[in-house]
Each structure stands twice: as C-alpha cells, then as structure tokens.
Image (cartoon, rainbow, N blue to C red):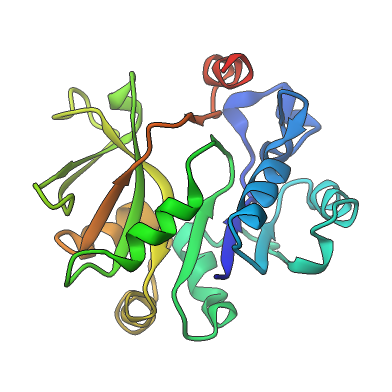
Length: 229
C-alpha cells in the first residue's frame, strides 16, 4: 500500500535544533525520524512512498539518497507550503485510485502498522478513513476524539482547553479510495487536513488505538521524552 509522508514543516518549536536540521530528520535515539518511519513501514510491507519537502530540502534529499529506501521514494518539493490537505490533493494520483496512507512524519511512532492496516480492512460499514489514535497526558495540546462502542469517531476537538477525554489523533490515516475521491471532488480548496477535511467525515472515521509508544516531538520537552522512551 502506497504512503505519503508529510515532511515539509519548519519545526519552529524545536529551535535551535531545527535551525540546521529539518524536523523530519531530528534524531531520536540516534536515528532520524524519517528513517524510523521508512524502516517500520517497509517492514510492514507498505510502499512505495512519496515525501514532500520545503524547509532544508537539500538535507532531506541527501538523507533519502543515502538510505536503502531511495528507490522506493519519490520526492516532491513545494516551493510554497501547500498545507497537509493541499499536499494530499496535489499528489492524489500517486495512490493510483487505491486506498493509501497519509502520515505526519514528525511523530515518533512504534505502533503495529500491520495491525493498523488490518483494522482498516475490517473497518465498520460506512467508515472511509481509519485514524491511528493514542492516549496522551497533555490532551489540550492534541486533537482529541470521542468514539462510540464500535470505535467510530463521533466528536473531534482540535487543541481546545479541557477536552472531554485523552484519546488523541495521531495524524496517521488510512484513506479509502472512495474517501480520496470525495475529498478531490468536494474539498479541493482545503489546506489543513485536520481542520478542513476530518470534520467532514465525522461518523465515517474508525479509530484504531495503539498502546505502543507514540510521541509528537514538536517541543523540546516531548523530544526529550521520545529519546528517553
């Protein structure tokens, strides 16, 4: 199954580390985040991959060229950032009309990706997206979801004070071909996937919760947690 890895962000909250290193390449336990993703995805039989770039693109290009995954990766440079939804929309043909994976590649994730794909294949009737979720100790800094007894998302609270719960959106999505066609046909001007696309699919998103390590490395504090995990 093909996957788009979103890797173009500035990582401004991680400065000064990201003054010279793109966020997708910050090392966790000595390994660049993007390399962790590519290794784990390949082991779970995902691929080929598309990686978008913007900030410090040359370093991302050089890293990919140095890896054993280079022949599996297509690089797409964005002179101006398109946003998470914009990147998907501009590269939807990459999925060749089939289900595909969309990942924010700046998280440290040790979830069982094979189990995630299996859950997508067995998703409830009517669900078109499977979202990887995890429990967080800082719910106000995350997108929090509420699910029903079938693990279908019924409410979504994007980074609000005192959200009702701690089940967080991991920004890893398996999208059905039907979902992508709907996004292309009806939501083609959206920029942000979490705020512009996901709310349109409430009631049609399956939550797949991982109990394995999942950490957004967006701040010095969470980056330290990832390296200590």
